[in-house]
Amino acid sequence: MAKIILTGDRPTGRLHLGHYVGSLRRRVELQESGEFDKIFIMIADAQALTDNADNPEKVRQNIIQVALDYLSAGIDPAKTNIFIQSMIPELTELTFYYMNLVTVQRLQRNPTVKQEIQLRGFSDDEDNNNKKGTPVGFFCYPISQASDITAFKATTVPVGEDQEPMLEQCREIVRKFNSTYGPTLVEPDILLPDNPACCRLPGTDGKAKMSKSLGNCIYLSDSAEEVWEKVRGMFTDPGHLQVSDPGKVEGNAVFTYLDAFCKPEHFEKFRSCFIGKKVSFTFDSLDEVKDQYRKGGLGDMMVKSFLNAILNDVMEPIRARRAELEKDIPAVYEILRKGTEAARAEAAQTLKEVRHAMRIDYFDDPVLMSGM
Ligand code: TRP
Image 1 (cartoon, helix red, strand yellow):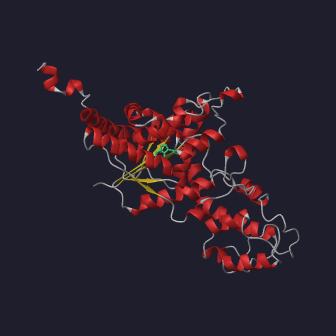
Image 2 (cartoon, rainbow, N blue to C red):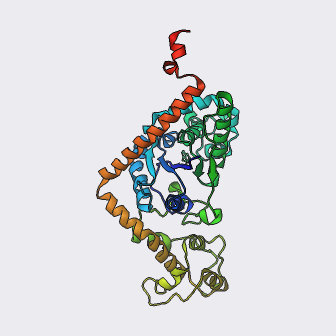
Image 3 (cartoon, rainbow, N blue to C red):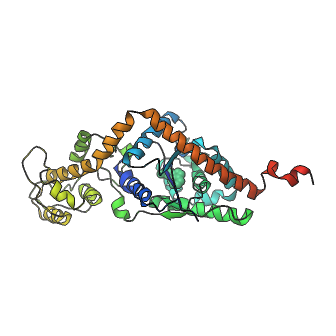
C-alpha cells in the first residue's frame, strides 16, 4: 500500500518557533527521507473559520503567510503538495456523509474539543446568560478533519499529542464506514514527535505554550533584532538575581530552548557570541553550561546571547529564503493553485469511491437508470 502523509495547520497567524520545533522541522525531514509516496500539507482555512467566522479576512491574509513559512522552512513543492482546504469542496461533501456516522455524544467526549470549547469560552451553560455558545461547525471539526485525512487515503498523520483524539475519531469513522458500506477508506496512523519533551516549546514568558494571544512567540519571520529583543526579555529563573547566585535550569525557558536547538557544533562556532562585550563562552557542552548555571557564576545575559546566536543560526537561512519568496508573491500563489488542483483530483477520486460504496452514485448506475 502507498505511504501517504497528510497534515496541516490553521492559518490564523504566522508560524512560530513552537511550530518549527513541534512539526515543521519534522515535516522537512519526512519529506527528505524519500520514504513516502505522496505528501500533502493542507492550509486548513475552513477549519480556521469554524471559530473565526466573524473574521474571514484574518484567515485570508494568513494563508500566504503560512505558505511563506512552509516554503522558507524547507517544504519543497516538488516533493510536497501544499493546498488550501476550502478550495476542495469534496472535503465538505465527505464531512456531510461522515456526520451520520458520529454521534453528538461521541463528539462531546472528545477531550481536545472539550478543552478547546473551554479555552474559547464557548460555554453552553445557558443559566449563565452566555450568548456565546459553541458554533456547530467548530463542534464538528473533528469530523471535517477525518475527511481531510481520508480524502487523500493518508496512512500517516504527523501531528502533536493534542491531535490524538482527532485521529482516534477518524479511525472510528473509517471502521464504521467500511463496515457499513464495504471496504473503501484507509485507517491512518498518527506519527507523534520523537521526543515530545523537547518538541514542546514554552513561550518566551515561560508559559506552557507559544500563543499569539499571549504575545510570547518568536515568529519564523522575525528579524534578528526582533529575536534578540525577545530573547533578552525571556523568562529565566526568578531566583537567579546575581550572576553568582545558583540558578534553576528546570522550568527555565532559556534552557528549554537550548535543549530544543543546541547542537554540539554550536559551542565552537559561538565562542564569542556575547553581544557588546569581549567575553568568551568557554563551555563545550550543554551539560557544562547547566552545571555552571546551577552552581552560580553564569549570568542570564551570557546564556541568552548564546541562545540568540543559535536561534539566528537556525533562522538565518529561513529568513533569506523568505526574503527571496516575498519578491514574487504571485509565484507562491501559483504553487498553492497547482498544489490545490492536484490535491482536488485525489479527493475527487476518493469521493467517487465513497459515493459508489454508499450507492448514491445514481447517475453512474446503469441498472438504476434503466428502471429495472
Ligand atoms: N487541527 C489541526 C491544527 O489545529 C489542523 C488540521 C486540520 C489537521 N485538518 C487536519 C492536521 C488533518 C492533521 C490532519 O493544527
